[in-house]
Image (cartoon, rainbow, N blue to C red; front, side):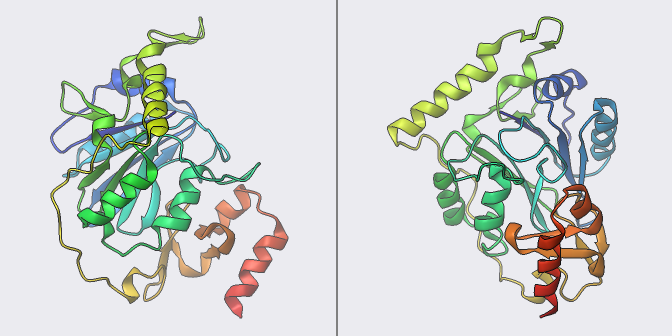
Length: 288
């Protein structure tokens, strides 16, 4: 099911709550925050202590921090499918829920990646500051899904905010799994109903009724003029960003994978075990 946690500026989420999120959603975790006009993304698949150190480091900066803990529903359990995901170099996002879209059997991409690559990346550069576009996007994903965006200024934007909750210490969580400890010995949670059944029941009711319960309630912003060359991935720069590991790489070390609408570095292409024929096909298309 996953859980998203937002730590606004000046707020610190307790280690206990973060540990609960990790234990209850144990297919990888990711964090995003802003520093000097860049979005910093860190992902960890195995060690909570190592991941917690990333959160401690992020808290030192003047930025909101968005954290995602994953339970896999589609796609592989790896860095590529571990949130957050890049929409463009100045905007990343996390998702909690299951999108009602077609995901091919044995797909290497999860539903969120498919949705991002096919629908959100082509949107206008500053779409997240446009009230109408965000309303349409929120309606499209349905009230059972929650999106959290973070820009390079360290500001966050929530779709379906009221489907989550604000904790007493001022943090926002997309569901209540942060409250419940997991007991591996007994294979159960302290209160399964609190974090699983209530979410699924509410999601089912909203979907079956066809009614939208929540509206995007951010203040309306004007859409800034769309930039051309410097928002095109890699054009005008000698670096690029891998959509899997989110590392800044030399342009020649990043390849556009057309089938995924993603830019991947050579190391991630190897790690994801993409077929040589597919890889060669992408390279040839770039050279033509």
